[in-house]
Image 1 (cartoon, helix red, strand yellow):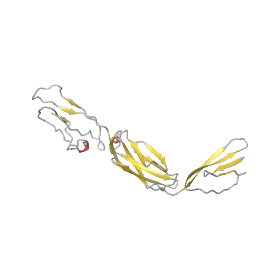
Image 2: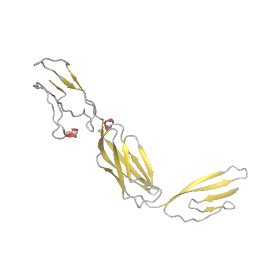
Image 3: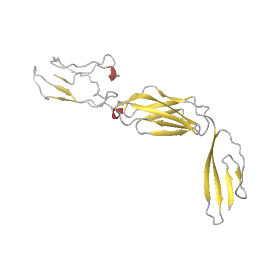
Image 4: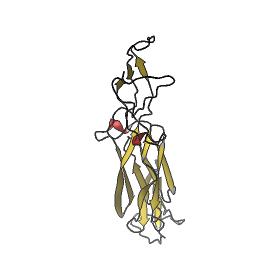
Length: 226
C-alpha cells in the first residue's frame, strides 16, 4: 500500500509505511486535510480531517430600525464585534418563520429577511429571531423578540341597500380583513361619508387623529354605522 497526507495547509507527506508521525504548523483558521491509502488492488480509501486554530467566538447581532412590518416587507440584522473571530466561525440565524440561514466568517455586514407569513401564525402574535455564532471552541447565542408582521389590510364594506330615500336609515357594515399583529385583530378603520348632509343614528366614524399614514394611532370606527 501507498500512503499520502494532504495537511490542508499547503504541505503534504508521503510516508513509506504505517507507523509514521509528523508535525505541522497552522495559522489561525479552519483547515481540511486528507489521508489517502492506496492498496495493491487499487481500492483507494480517503479519510478527511479538520484542524481548527482559534478562540471562542465573540460578537452579537441587532435588528436595524422598525420590526413592525407587513407581509412582504423585510427586516435587517447587523452583526456586532465579530471582526476578531477566526475563519471557521459560522453565523446561524433562525428568523422564527421556519427559515434558517448560515454564513461563514466573515458574514455579510447586514442581513435582510423578507417575511411572507403573518406573525399571527404564532401564539403570541410575533416572531422571535435567534442567532448562534459558533466554532469548534464554543457557541455564543442571542436574539431579539417583537418582530410583528401584519397582514396587508384590504378595505371592504357592505350596505344594507344600494337605494335609499331621504330620511330613511341606511346601514354600512365593515368587512375589512387583514389581521394586525400582535393582537391580530381586524385592522383599524375610519368611515368617511361624502358628499351630502347626513345624521349618524348609531356607531362612530373613528378618527385618524392627525396621522393618516399611521393606522396604529387611529381611533377605529364602529363595525357598522347607520
